[in-house]
Image 1: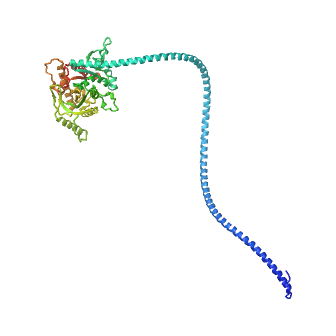
Image 2 (image 1 turned 45 degrees about the vertical axis):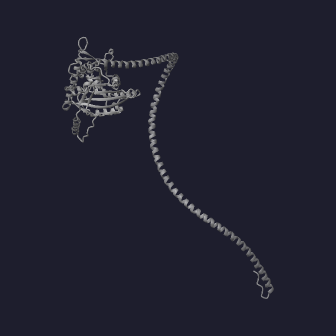
Image 3 (image 1 turned 120 degrees about the vertical axis):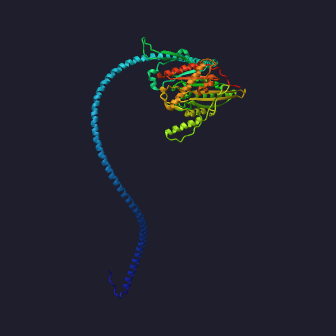
Length: 586
């Protein structure tokens, strides 16, 4: 430190002051420089501070995001810890399961080891088998060489046979063509034969009779020895004769059976294998006659259960196309209707137009009943009430009287009947269905569904030819007679007994008429009026009509007496001369 000058040393003090001023100036300059530097540094610091503030804000935001991420990480860690724990538990369970499976595998391994031992033993046996098979193989190879040579020889023979077969096929085709031509000629000749036969029968004026033997129904009838050997169809009789064996089965000396053979001859005999179409082919010309302007009549006769209704209608509405029934089993009525409509269509080209109408009646207990009349419905609920109501309905329907009338031209009409116009086959099928529903049937010991009346289906045809102006009128009668019954076998009582008596009575009256006609005594009285049935059939049996009767017979041994009675009656019918039918044409 500089010593302070005395007060009197002004110059010195002045020099000191100047030195001090210079020093201060230097300090000021230094301070300014430091201030400038400090200011510059301050600016820089402020700039840095701003950047720091911004960075701090960014860092703060980042810190918040990091905090959230840390929270998420913590949550994830917690979840991972939980999953890890569960995984550890699963691993523990897997380890325990693995240990169980390992124990099971060891057990199986032990079992397999045992099996392996068995297989090894079996392998040793197979080795022995292989050795044996190898030896056999060498033998087979030797045989194969032999067979190869044989095969080559057979190939040569095969080629020769193929050549011969081709030649035979050509010959076969030529023979088939010849057979087809001959078959066509056979059918033409058969149609001509049938037509000529019909012409001959018409000229004779006889009632034609066809016989039909029904097949066995079920294994019980087929297996019964008593039912076999009763009927024989001689091969040299053109299907027109039936031989019936009558008598016991006991053997006598010489090995021959007791009894006798009775021969019956008819216009056609159909065996058990005959089909509905085959039967209809034989009557088709007669059905055609109705369109030609003739009165025609086809009726069935035979004991109950002999197949009459099946022949005329078929089994249970077969004509309605029921999918459970073979359509080939359609009966004579639906086939006749179909033929008539088909022929009518063919005749349209020749100028013919036809109108048709039909009725259906039954003769029940000697009363005529309209089978097409709508019956009133009954409100009865119990079976007994329904039976009573049905009886009332039948009685009500029979209150309306129906009379049979014959004119001098050989035509027969019945009054007060429901007559239905027919324009298509299905309408006739509806008629048949309704009539089958209304017709009287019942169960007896001889037949599960026995017809208790005679039914008559009549189809009237009127034709006009617009070219020639001719008109014709034809009638087709299709009649299903109730079956004859023996009272001691049918087991009927009450109403069924009354029905059976009336059926047998009317059939007996029919027999009387046939016997009278067969006697050929033109002056003799013919008892047509003894029953409604014979009076209704008067013109068909002894008037202006082409008539054919089916006699249906049972194949059963227990029915043989009834069968013989039916066949004898049919022979009498076949002998009846009713004269030649006249055509109704103008």
